Image (cartoon, rainbow over all chains, first blue to last red; front, side, top):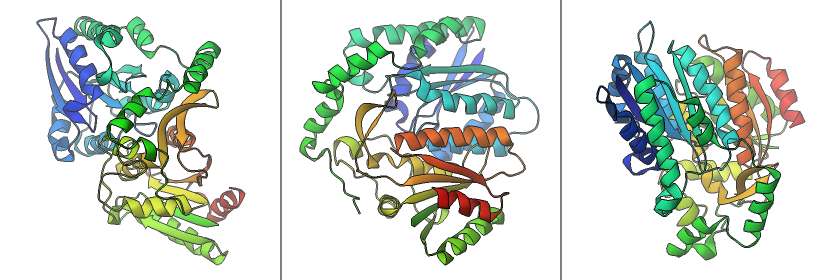
Length: 221
Length: 183
């Protein structure tokens, strides 16, 4: 199977989407009959060429971080290009990976509805949308904290490489909780009261000497 | 009311949405509202690069040098912000979406539990109400309108405010005026 992976992160090769795709691709290529190519949507200038590749692929996976509750503007830009260059007739199979910094899956369910409709609009068999929250900060985490996440993406890729489908159990495992349970909310509030929930942001703010200015309101009328 | 319109129509030759916005602006001004319409296609609005300078380096300020500060100032002084766009490939234009995600300097990186879910903390004490004006072209259906409006209700939640209405250019201007008066 010839798979085209489209990375829709504005951070391109340096982003978290790239890390998740790297693990997915490793798993996918474990099957020697498979080949994969990754394209980056970061630059609009590449969109036309990638839209042409889209038409020639047997399957396409578009992965992106959740930006303002939906796809980043550059991904929407690519979808508009796709709408212009695509001829009539069926498209390749299409699946999506949406990752976000929010811990719950619910945030990404609204764009999932859009993506499912997009597949229909493109006359493309829909492979589903993989949703994963809590991804922001993975580059600052020690390996023991990300090991299971990366393993899950590798096995998602491995199964995809054999069955050409997202394995439903792995998809469910990755989405984890739709909403925070009462217990999780209580834990979150307790962590918040001792400043644990914002540790990552505080670390970055302090590193940049911006901690004291963190509540600035430069556009206060 | 201080009303800001962000016109996300990328095509100046697609006149229906332009006419609707012009007519609405005239009616609102006649009622004594202050209306500021920004035509995004005529402005330099770059994509968010995800650098997070606005959260961790220069809190509240974007690192990019383009026309967004005009929008920030205008939006934070407004009582109501109207996002206007044609539906293209089932959603608002990439142009409007690009401007929307540049709103992150206006909120805080910290996460808090808000209405039972994790959302970002407010940076400002007060945010404008939001409304959507959508132009449903030949390629769009009611499902696209619903999907888009639902996403904008979520955007409103993360922008610490509420999406008060979603109207279409096929509806009479009077209906838009009623929706605005109620917001």
